[in-house]
Length: 100
Image (cartoon, rainbow, N blue to C red; front, side, top):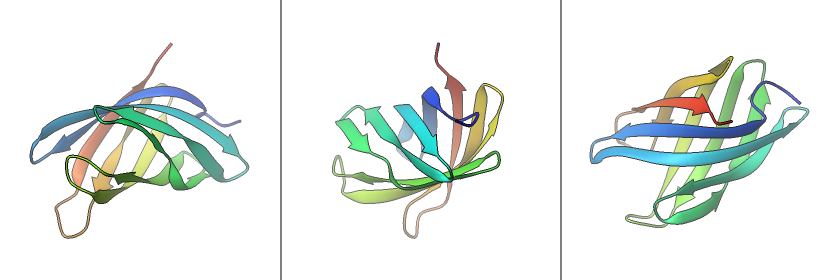
């Protein structure tokens, strides 16, 4: 178990406004698994990796527009910061806080 395991509330600042996802993350070695629950329901974490204080994973969104978001986040205590990228769009800022 690393410092990323647990429940997180993250906010992704997109061109269309802030989007919140509630993450449940678990590590086994460098493998990161879990789910993200947003306005359109639950999504599985894809291609998750955790190395040191950095996590990377992908969410495959189906609504409102089908797209993949690739996250690179750094965990510092009970805070998480980083970026989310989708195709040709500029990177979105991500901030998160551990829940409970």
